[in-house]
Length: 82
Image (cartoon, rainbow, N blue to C red; front, side, top):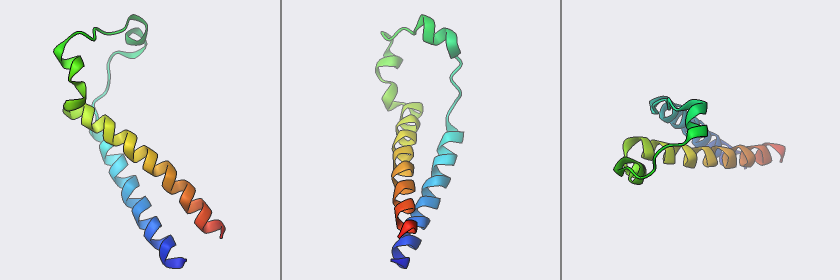
C-alpha cells in the first residue's frame, strides 16, 4: 500500500507542476464582463476553428489536467485514510 501511495503522490506532483505551467502559458482574455453581456461574433473563421489553435489546445489540456487533479486528490485522500 505504501508503494501505491508513493506512486500516486509522484503522479500528483507532476500533474500539479504541468497544470501550473499550462495555466501560466495561457493568454488573458480581454473581453471581461462586457464580452459576456454583448457576446462575440461566432461566425468568423477563427471562432469556428478555435479548438485547433494553440489557445484552444491549452484550454483543453487545462480542463483535462484539472479533472485529473481532482480525481488524484480524492484518491490520495482515500489512500491516506487507510
